Image 1 (cartoon, rainbow, N blue to C red):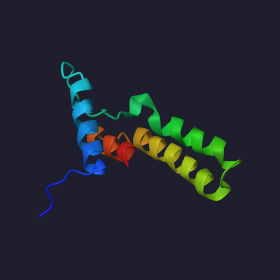
Image 2 (image 1 turned 180 degrees about the horizontal axis):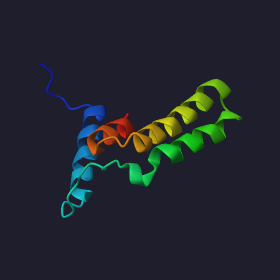
Image 3 (image 1 turned 180 degrees about the vertical axis):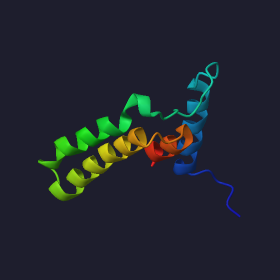
Length: 90
């Protein structure tokens, strides 16, 4: 049975303890609510299209176009908020 504390375990334990002490517990933490009004898919799509020339035409170009298309699909078909949020999340 190993009772000795090695450097790795000490470092992980002390870092976790320090992080716990430094956290501000007064503010509640909640997940980011994804919404079509933020146009996140359009922003990400344009970003991917802008990168396509430098990175990978096929992957980034198609990814960007798919994100913009997904946004337009949700808006034009008037999807429910839950369905739209799930598509944005993906």
